Image (cartoon, rainbow, N blue to C red; front, side):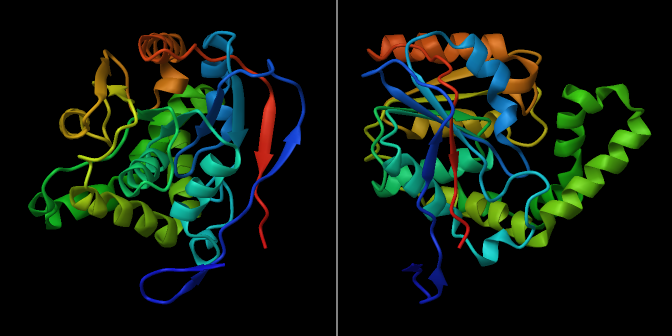
Length: 276
């Protein structure tokens, strides 16, 4: 158990690794973290294309799709990410969207120290004043459009647009106000992060057609980090691991090699959180 500044107790899980395969001994370990309403399977095509030199670890997080919408009452997402990175001794952390913001915050606070971080489609604003009522309205009322984009890229692509829109709203409702509030609270904290002391090399990568995490925010984030590379994937939206897994894998591997780390391989390890 841990307590936040307000004295509230949070349960933060200790990952219980379960091995379904074996990775190359002594290789760097890569941890993949999906976003809000996502799932571990979203990384499969990326992992398959990312090379053959890392152990790759994956996890179903409390904020997974079709999970418990009341997970924020049981877990502090900042502790979830910190525990996973530290307990797995991850050398490389690859995180998408909501999880990318949590990783960024942990890096700023020094609670995790991987050898490299890859922030995929991260949310960031450099100025607190840029959050206004229209911004809140936009992200609240258009939240389902992010799920609609993901559904166009997956197995649901065979459905009609009307049916996908219905499914997107059901996913939004499943995430619920508790999950949305956790995401927006993370976003609101980004201007307050002291990124000047982050020494971990970071790749900030996203699509130029991202309707959720703005390209301008990604550019601001890369500029604020002392050691960051900014890559924009053309004709790509909020889910590069689904839409452009080959280009995403190539960019990540190039970045890691430039920083003296090898690319990634799929080791078929999985992590499960202890929900207590």
